[in-house]
Length: 407
Length: 232
Image (cartoon, rainbow over all chains, first blue to last red):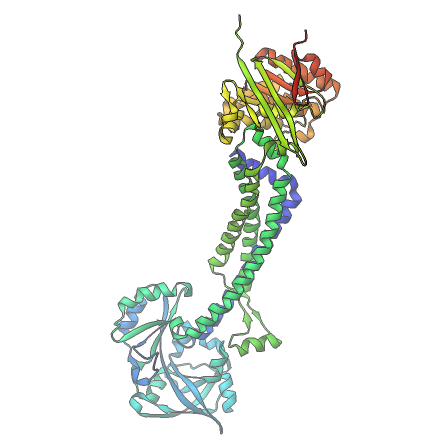
């Protein structure tokens, strides 16, 4: 306790230096938090946009459907299966969807499109599809005979709300599927790719069009915590008849997206590393200075009977104190900033917006407020302070009392 | 009749420093024998090896050859760890520059060594109060060194040196930074403690006031004892 108190008092012998060092740790932690939170936020947003309106974070489908997305591999979904899935905690919604490819035609133009049969009321409740409406209206009933189109697809086909879209494709067991629907609304989704390709139809309509009553190609599962997706998938699999069905995560469904995130995040981790390296040198400089200018005092302490290991412990405490002060202030301020930007994402404009869109990313900077954004930074800074204090500690162990007393 | 006990026994003590060009013999075959309760001064011109001798006796430096036995323990054979422990319990140091811990008050500085010894708080407080009274520093007990005069700081340093009830106090030029009034008071104080508590004092000094008070004067020249007298 004596040494801990001594370490604390020593910090305030040169108040300005301690505050400057603490401030460098503080700004490093804030910058690292913001950098990591925005990176993870962009990834989370990207994943959310990509999977919410296509597969869900988890998807249950007939075995083989993912490899060969044929309507012939559609499944009959029973309330029993939905009940089983919902019984396991962590799932917020089980959303049946019917996915296929059709040729969509408007006034003189036709284009291949991704066709999605959805339950409008369920999507409204769980994925907020209605919030993506940029023109027209959202279907008021689950049985309405209307279609919603991605805004870029509608533009390509020359369609606007109130016009008619013609869908031609192949139905269940190779029946011909053709129908015409009034365009009720246009959707601006987070994924530009989907905006260029997607056609939404109420599931009931889709089943009629494809001649697949009571069927769906997949059940999209919305989950409470994307971070716990893998664990949830492991818990769910034993409850599913795996001879008929399979449960896939978005990483299995879109491995290229997962690879892109992994590769991109490596760059961000290197940037964080550089940031911490700069901070490390700052902290090391202060610790060395604090040790060097007290060489004489260490000589006194050793001559009085204080063991070198205890002086080293005192230095460790000083380093930890500075880091803890800077770190806790950084985390508290970082949390406030992250909270603000999490609730108020920054929309991008101009060339940056175009660049994001060209990569298929929604042009907003949203930040993630996952707890590990904060805890990891705190751990890293503490680890650095513990590692750096090793240098002045070595100097204490090499200290010659007489030379120190004469210094 | 009181029987004297040897507390310092240095035998054939030599210290050679590796200088830039030639080795420098700072202490050259010194024999020194001090009985318990002595009040002795090592004197000599600058560079004669006074401080080096004290450092060797206090175990702060290791001799090139020879040995030092303090209170029956040959400290030149002790490991670094045991040597620090020995110093903590048996030796008190008083330095020319006082060398108090700047962030601690006078009271805390005096109690510091006892805290390192792991003594209970109550006995530390009792001993500190006792020492503060002895060095006449009760009124400044809660003042930090920066706000004390040189004389006051040195009195606190003496109290700190005595806190662990050491058998030996080694004082390296203790009056060098003090004016004559404070130097006189400090010497009176140490002489009294020597008499009352029977602590052995060994000074390195070239201050005539200290030499005058000392009951034994050992003169060093070029690292060798050239005279060892007991004035009066």
